[in-house]
Image (cartoon, rainbow, N blue to C red; front, top):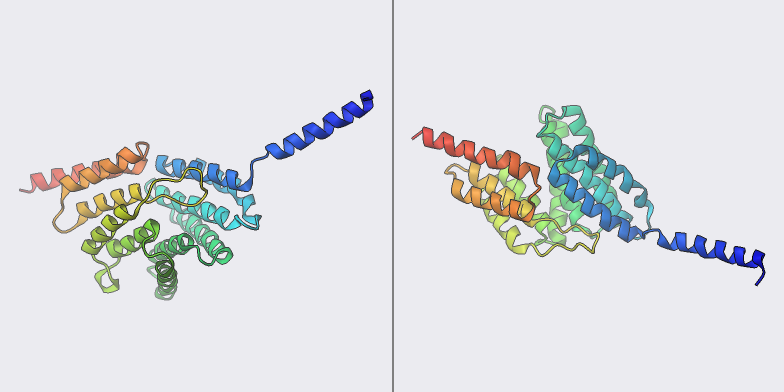
Length: 268
């Protein structure tokens, strides 16, 4: 083999190796899912924002673009959720929620049987409705969109833990006239705990749910008319056992429960 031929062979070999070493879209999404979930639990707003931009180019993938849209939407959703605890401005909050809604709706258009996207879009539109509570027409439009998406999610996967989480939130936060019921929220979160399976670290599909159910159950038990603070504490601790780095559960919810306990003790 001549020197020139050998060099050409080596160039082709290494070029092929570089191409084949590039992670597949699936593997990129698996890594992105883990990173987004970790940033969410840690309350890392900057990381959530950067991950959103890193994932965005994967939206064009013909088979998995719907999951790229889901995870960019999720990053925006959690930017709003964590930011609301950090004095985020209303304009920034709305911007993140609008972007989340757009990405979740892009996801469900690409995969019309993807219950997770419908449920997430429902939750986001419900929150946007609340932010527009001073404009009845806009608020009602978002409420109707939220209802429509949640109805679709429940028709597809009624026992999906993330669908149950959104339904539980409706029961917990909606006024009684709109179907609100803390007791039904508690019942739904308990059902969600039972429905939650093990995490799937080798899959790009959403698998969160059990820690969120435990956290939400703790919050619901704390704010109901006759608080059960011991049970609230137990559930918050159970959530932290699953996700020890969870900023909200550790640094916000647990102190809220203890403050409520102190308030009730002093009021006796």
